[in-house]
Image 1 (cartoon, one colour):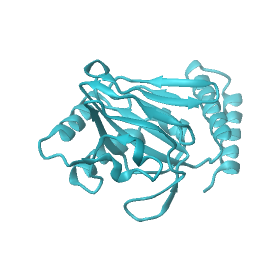
Image 2 (cartoon, rainbow, N blue to C red):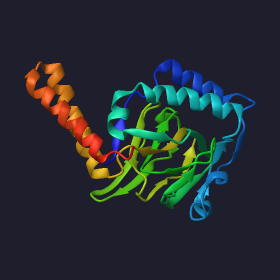
Image 3 (cartoon, rainbow, N blue to C red):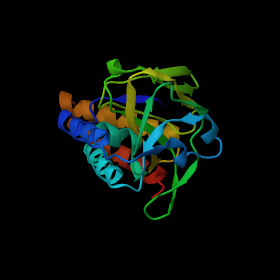
Image 4 (cartoon, helix red, strand yellow):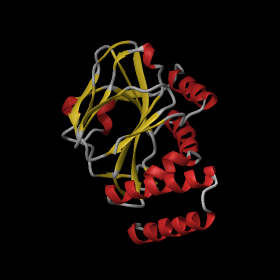
Length: 228
């Protein structure tokens, strides 16, 4: 499932994050620093050094927004979040077709994190740059994604994907991976759909007893399918 989630960052958070990344002292380095052996040859971009103070502050802004966004929580069912990274593309930079590594080491404590989901949070106005589409291959075809600043796309980490060359302006984004409580993508999608139906029943004043039954089924399935 490829899911677009609007408005993950509100205007004040977006402005704070952009100012942080565009400050003269921001620690931009070669993006290949975090690429695996199959990604490095096709990767041409810059990233904020993930050990820097800029990265730490930016991660806090993004993580706080994710923690309070109900759609992200419902769709991802996050167990472990890789601390968000920040990249930029300009002057023809691109990232060729690749698949994200299945396991990453958490930079803070070294524990292994299974990458169930990949996410890109767009931080630049799409009209301010040409190119820079995130292209994701899926079972039903190819999706090309270029979103307003503050919007996020969530997609399977198993998917082949690439970023097209940026030929004008600067594309700035945050990206990260999620180890979900529910490993199986099909099970996770069923829970997301069920949660959506439960929320709709709540907002439309549907049968309260039926809704309570569905809530119980939802949580029993989550217990059954959860890795934790």
